[in-house]
Image (cartoon, rainbow, N blue to C red; front, side, top):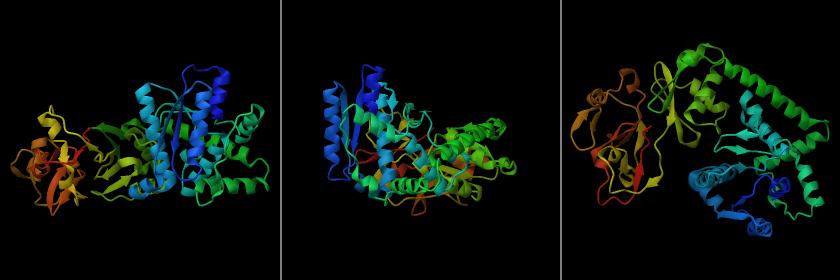
Amino acid sequence: MTLCSLVLSCGLFDDITLLHINHNLRMTAKRDCDLVKNFALDNNLKFESISIDIEGLAKKNKNSIETEARNVRYKFFSEFVAKNDALLLLGHTQDDNIESILMHIFRGCGLHGLVGMSVESDYPVNLIRPLINTPKIMLYEYAKTHNIKYYEDETNLDTKYSRNLIRKIVGEVSEVYNGVSGNILKLSDIAKKAAKALENKLDEDYFTKKDGAVVLDKKVMGTGVSEYYIIEAFKRAGLKTGFEAKHIDAIKGLDNGKMLDLPSGFVVYSDKESFVFKKSMHNAECTMHNDCTQNDMRLLADADKLEGATLRFRREGDKFKKFGGGTKKLKDFFNEMGVPSRERDSVPLLVKDDKILVVIGYEIADEVKVTKDTKRVIKLWKE
């Protein structure tokens, strides 16, 4: 709200849409939505809003409310930006940045976690944070000076939410140490420069890309800066946020032939010579089209027939009834598909009752193909 009035007063844009999400976590949530909507109407602005049962969605997806709210928020933003070819402006302030940095520290992070938010970012879409260097107190002063009505979110005082707890801690520490906020930001700036310097020294020869996956040579483990190679592999694979120090440590200790789930639907596989970072199977349902090609059909499966399937890697004697019929030894199928021997142990398989239903990234089994009786279809990613 206040951000929009600042943009208006500067005359930067002549076509502004306010985006609002009602998480339905408070009795006053609709009141806040109406305030933003009325602000838009009073200033001849466009307005779009969605209403989400964020608590129910978080339980369903086994996420914290804060994580689920962030996922929903960025999905809404991304879809709007793509649909309207828009520029996204977020209202994060200096206070938000400081809280985020401390959250990263408490969760476990390296230099990249200390960097915090940037003015410009390309995740999840190209966006700008014009107020990231502005203390929140200045927004209150601006709103008061210009008679802009606002409401305070009463849950900001509820310390069961991690960000609110950190906000309280910052306030209490600031009473003892002068300049706490400025010192945290100085540390963030030092970390940003150090991280950039390390990134510039990474050897490109350790990275390769194949079939949409980012392959990181395990020789990086002897460089002394392996965590920075792993972070860079995350980013090149498309995972730009959500990973923590615990993920990096888990990858370092990943045995050959094993797989690790990463945030946002990514996985990493470990083979004898490398770590392979890629998107996992896409779980969203999709609809059938009459013009699907034979190759398209190999990536579509009957979702109900995959219920109860588990993920594993190949075993001696595995057989596969491939799409269109014909049972083959998995070894022969790999030969037919031209899969290099060194990569075969890291190809994930969806298996049910010891039957291979999906060779992920290559083909589905005939028994899970889409038919006229199929009610739910899932699409499998193939980069």
